[in-house]
Length: 550
Image (cartoon, rainbow, N blue to C red; front, side, top):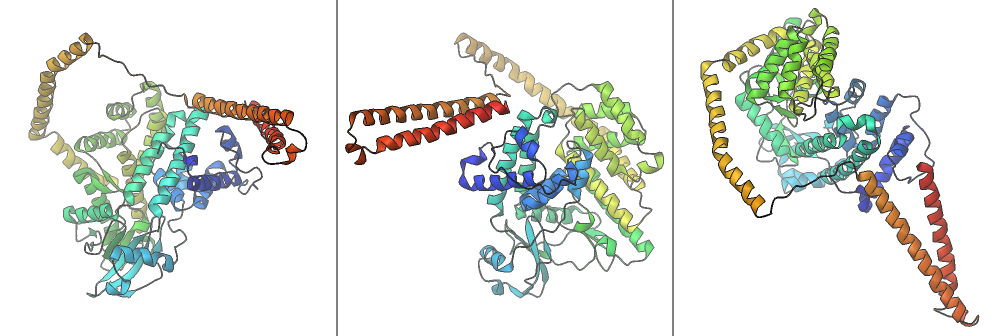
């Protein structure tokens, strides 16, 4: 994603569309700050009555599926982005305008390797759901099984890659020209989010996630994922059981049954997070169905998180520190697990954590654990602490299951659900067998590195002796100088061409009679003056405009 998006015609057309939408939604000043090429001068303002976060949401909606999906994934990064922006991005609609059936059918038949009628006895051509990545249809196999058909939108991967290149270009410009945003490392965020989006385009991964969950799920009578039909599924097509059920907000079960379903959902999510380390990263009400027999079905396994054993231990320590209102312990735990290479001020961080914890009363802490986690991740982010992306996905999953639980049961409290799992994890963590195993591998790794030290030192001395020792320097923050140099070279080349054109035209006019000037190729001498005048005026305008921007 390091290519210049303006190097290809298709990207240039899309770039123009993006700039137009940004300008129309009130970001003209932003475009000038990052020195975006002025492709259009007069674009009517549309969203002046909205605040900046609302305008960003509207812009993502107008830019289409890639921008919507990108914004949806960014809504999980409370550790990196401001909370008001997170709230607006979460409001992005799940359904987008569906692609007509006549455009989807060829893609479906290409994945099926034959006509639709050869595989399905019935097929409803009206989409049951339309998302930013795929559309879902209801069908019946020849065997009689009722299934859901999830087919990827046409040309999506190509369009998404082009859009991600352009977004990366914008992120680089923002990093260069907007000092207040440099702490967020926007190009890295774009690269990480883009990789996540491209992985989600592989439906084989989603299928494997659903199969793995069903295989390891300890509560199959309460929670499950739809069974996958591997014989018909591909990287762009997913066929799974059609689940009859309703969204949590539409459930008509008695209050006691609703409370049991909420409890089952919370227990399942904590088992995924704490015990297995593999969890559904987006269990909101749109991805959950409640079946007539009061079971909970988790849909859309494209977004999942993975926690290592050490990451789960960190989580247990963090939960314990939050429950005890111990800001100092929160800071120690965070610093011990941070990925950042920059120095962090522990005192300032502890003060921010204390202020954040005071926002929640004792009664709220158990019922808003997901919100506390998101706020805490944001505090870490603004203080320069970067944690693994899976923690942000985990916080989002916790918040989503809390919100879903409260839809089913207003008294839903996640704290008593989490406590047995955390106790079990701590017993496992401090068990003598576990500690012995960890010490064994630590010592084994240390001995291996110790054995390598003599050989490493000998290679170093040999390189010094033979004069092959070298030090590589990486220059950062020189993009602006490079761009200025390129612009200067381009103007110099244009000036040389103008001078050459004037000189050649003057030689022709001075050595040829007036009668011969009317003949080819001599009349090109007069036209040379016109061309030189035109390019000279253009060069003068570019130079004056560049000086004004400075």
